[in-house]
Length: 190
Image (spheres, rainbow, N blue to C red):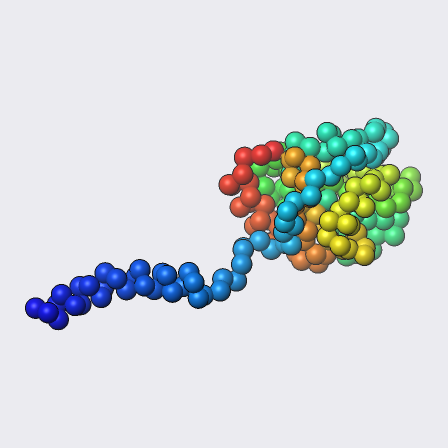
């Protein structure tokens, strides 16, 4: 009888003891995001740029309201890796399904595009907002992640205009897509 009682007490208390031991002594590997999360988030401030092709002036308000994947590039010297990153961004947006309208792809140009490149990239990436004269945005993104080169990644901006996350170049679309699907599942902004 004493053995049975001791066994029942042990079975009932073992999960509590194990849970406490894991809580205090086991180190977690961290979150599940595939990109570099910026904590705390940094709001974009006093930004303006010109939208291609009509040179329409865009301010912070125009960038708010949707989640944005942002790439920074010089499209006059865009190599295969650069173009692949843009193609992956396009595919990620198209993979969003019912959340397609919540995500906007944005390309920030370091240098203005030639007329030939402008036609080429507007045709290849019609769902992108392509912005030039975006030095203020590029500078803020570069400072937020302490980057020497702002071209070193794809960045996520939330609907409130905060810089949230960075994905290193060449990180592939799978992790970004998983992060965005999870984000849209649990977050109703945008």
